[in-house]
Length: 283
Image 1 (spheres, helix red, strand yellow):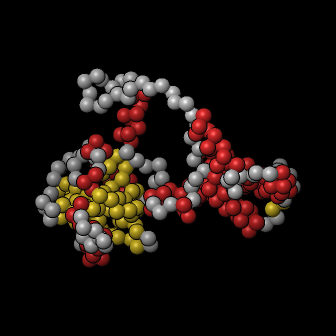
Image 2 (cartoon, helix red, strand yellow):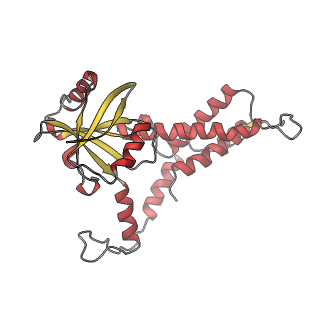
Image 3 (cartoon, one colour):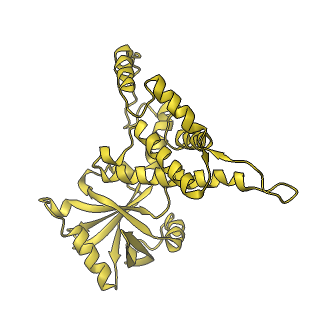
């Protein structure tokens, strides 16, 4: 076995140290770049997954054997992988992790128990393959002899029934303005002046949660850990970006005097809607 690199694993405030990656190969083309990434940060636990259902085409390269000299790290892997509550398929389950603070990363790491070697192993899963296949299919570059089946041309379905149902749901949606009183109330609140940082923070949070609920993204409406994490990431990105965007109101002019610009509620609302449109909405 050949030592490749070591990293740490973050899981709800607990940092698992000395997670060593070992390989049967002496050289790996993509490992050097990966080693640089993981030496500067760590992995982050996402959820348990059933390893036998991993699509083969998403697996990037061979597996790694995981070793550690840290007793707490050894106990962590035993607890997370070998002691899964209410599971009758013990050896089929593993844990899914990703590079910490890399929201746009397509690379995920799956730790699992290898029954053949009686060891903890790790596979790298690369979801960018899906985008590449979709691009090839869109540009008709998939060869006819490929194992990939092209999508058949389909007629565009009549969506009038769905549009009617969607309109009814929108009319009954409590988060959408449905009458003149709501419009007048919103118009009044949009003219409100935010005079301190606490009011600004409350307005940003309120508008983000409202915008996410309208888009069907609410922690109270899902039990999926992945969905909850996604909503949390979108909220954090939007909140930080909104705070940064509002800094323009504190800029000074050439005479070193603060601009007399005031932050209105509708200014914050416009920023939040633009950010959610950028982060969430699909054209």
